[in-house]
Image 1 (tube, rainbow, N blue to C red):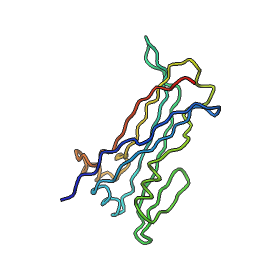
Image 2: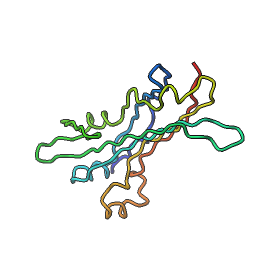
Image 3: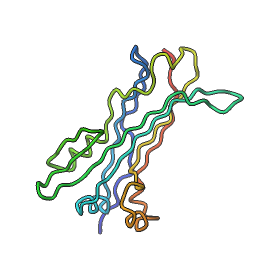
Length: 165
């Protein structure tokens, strides 16, 4: 019997206002479930997506989105070299073990969400953050086959107010 993987959790989440703008530092802690890891070893690349949106809280109108940012990582396994490859944008890095590769995609440091001119000092601001395994980018037959399987639902969401300096 395989034990179920732990639910993903945020181990670190910090919003910082600086001269550069609004910066976000995030660390997510999770283990890949057995079925997800098995698909990875069979040659199916996995895509992880982090989304963050900055909103201005308004009392009588719908909240106004000030800025939005998104990051996507591709995690793949190369059986000939027995390496894991993490691709982000046009860059890629190889790792000898899965733990190091997952650690790389689960941390974001100094992620710029907004420019200094986009945020005022007295505004009521909040950030909506989500981190997920994007099953929409899996091959179509797998998307149908994993429907309703909870181990493929790796999702973390958090909303936090931005403190005034």
